Image (cartoon, rainbow over all chains, first blue to last red; front, side, top):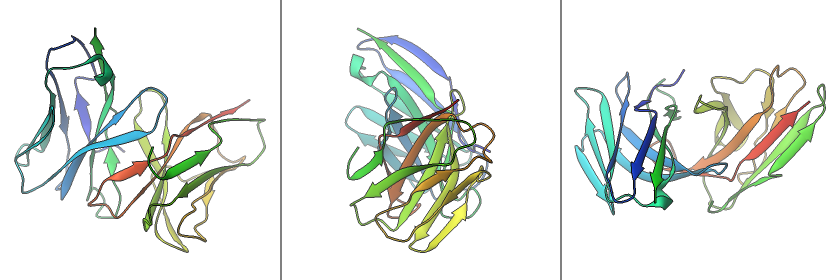
Length: 112
Length: 112
């Protein structure tokens, strides 16, 4: 079963707007990761946030983590058409094994 | 897609045939993973290996087999016992669960 669940699952925005997507998880984690997948391609790692961190930035990406609510958000600022993709969160320590559990993904469409 | 390759990109097989998907990495990573992706279901873990000559079942291992004879290689065999093998298969490698995973470009398998 998937631990991470992204919300909303589909988002359509105009170029230049911000896009926010959320992820919730059920058990304690060591870290949470976000990945991007362009259609028909492999996933690309975006950012990793550890359980003792609350916020992390990378370029136009901002990730927050609230371990008390077991949730994370990914914000993409000033979106571009090239940001059109699916975005997945992934958490570790789900079964206590050395593996990640991926959510079902958020599809983001940025309209030029 | 970094230093991890999958071949072929598209694969077609008749029902009842076994088929082996290739995954090779030159990143010197100890851990390797196989995921299956179906539309709307995100990534599901099939098998993973943390070290050469060792591997563990994931969530959906039935009908699949793997080997890890070399650090660089983690081939996946889809056997005739897999009831619904048509899917997009992704291989990944990483330094461990607390680190990012690097994904290959994927193999789209169609069984008719």
